[in-house]
Image (cartoon, rainbow, N blue to C red; front, side):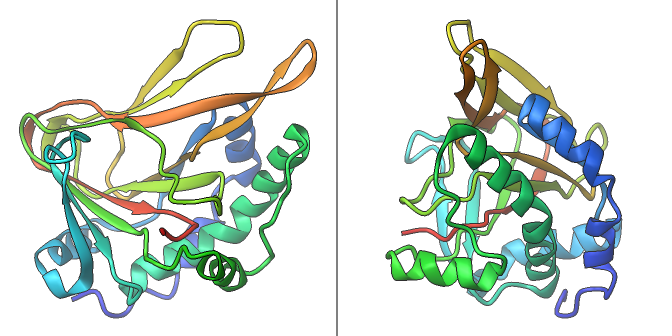
Length: 241
């Protein structure tokens, strides 16, 4: 299976137009990347879903009223491609995270090294892997939520589409809502192309206002899958309690 990631996974992430991606994140709180994984790599990651030993737990969303569908949290022994993607994104997202914290007058506790940041998470009691592989079938959906597992939070995360929309499944758009200051909530829907990533806000982002910068709370979810099967890979940069 996918025991050895191709050596250019990090290069693919770095090759994105990070100036444009940063502008998109600042303006909307989410940004679609270029293709990061090949179709074969996507299929290899999907196949991992049935290898139960790779996961620490399985969540039935209907049981917890999170929606409908299922996802599995990887153990800390991540497949190479997953670990490579996570490690590649962190230093590129770090300047955005620090700039957002400065605008909002909040601490920026994230060190240059992902390993050092995760060590801080573990010291604070957040020591369980939060990397997830999600599977949706017909009628499944994901309620709007935020992936906050404790006080140690990285403000951005990434979801990677693993199937071909319109071919492998229909429906299942990635949803985001933004609670704007003194205004009604704004929503967006994004179709995830196979192998592409969507960088998005974990909890909130800075929003310009007449009084300076305000906190814009955001939530994400998935619309109802109409047909087929939809898989995504979730990359979270803080661990869970």
